[in-house]
Length: 213
Image (tube, rainbow, N blue to C red; front, side, top):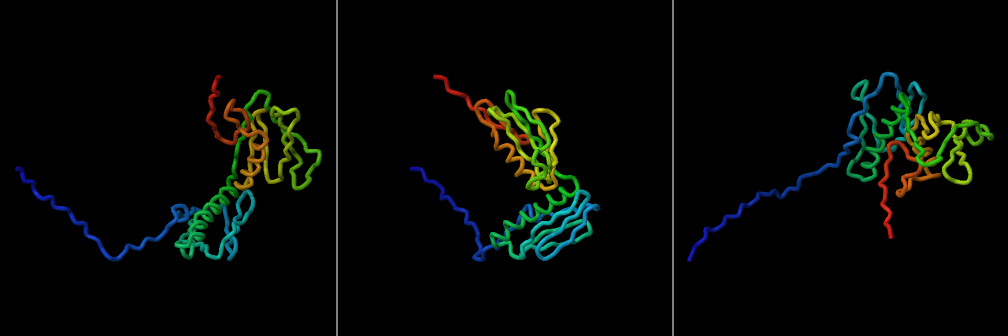
């Protein structure tokens, strides 16, 4: 009869006191470098950002605090990161401020591509002029319908059509730029069978294979 040695279990020490964990925001905690050609005017409810391309403002919640540890650095913090709403708005506010700085110094560009046989676009004068805040121009697109699609260009959007199948958009507000691009895309969304439609930026879709009977 074989005798086995007893197996000694390793005992893990533990402490009765729980370790306190504090929530942090990986995005909100990053400092923002401030360009020299941008000025700021903070207030209790908003932060005004002025640059070479204009001025804009970012809404600030009462629990959001702005700190300037150095002349060219901005830090965003909240009163209590353990509260979910404050933790969410921490990173969101930091992103909005960063986008406002880029918009007032460089702006945002976004290309749209028309993919499909006979798909064409051109920029022409809008017969309605500056009606409802328009820029006086409109996009006229042929997207496979029996009629042409007309999309008025807002005054805050700069639009160019360098080629019949490419539309170049420019705006100082990233959110407004995305909304207008989504509106243009909605007239012919990319479909997964033939890969036709209006593609925004580097958008790609997976082509589905058609089952043969």
